[in-house]
Image (cartoon, rainbow, N blue to C red; front, side):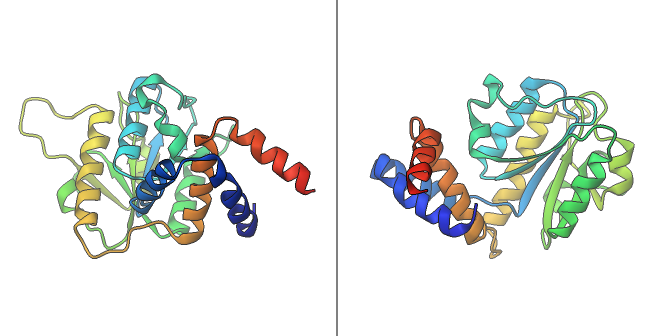
Length: 227
């Protein structure tokens, strides 16, 4: 959909939403970022996967990249409490295809460094991660962590410092800790981390539409009458 039509539809839909709700959407949108993005590789436990989405939404991280080589990702679980509808999900699930390679290639073209979350001999603590470049944090399966393919392709590795007998957190906790650390540092810095204006307009349109009861039907009727 071209930007002119996005703006036209957004203007039309604002008649169906309260000023208070529209203000809330705009306030949240201004704090959204894709300077940090999350990559989920073959998660198979819906409970943990959706908890990660909830953390992403809560910390204002808009884009999530989902690699489904072995396990299908179900974003509609109750743990997310609808968080997935406010996020932009990119799914890579072509059968017999290098979905991970496709995902990483796309992210690198967009200026991201691929950082795998796993203990590694060349890793650094999450609080020490250099934020000069956009960051794509990769999380692997609950049992085995990220795959060897990820380790081979990653630009770097991070871990969460541990001070107890446990060697690691589960993935949902790890994602929440990492996102809190990185988004807090970025929001306290002078970096420009907001979404670009074109993407922001698209997200605003989608959020307004899904806030309105029967939003899709209202849009379809408008377009059919418009010809």
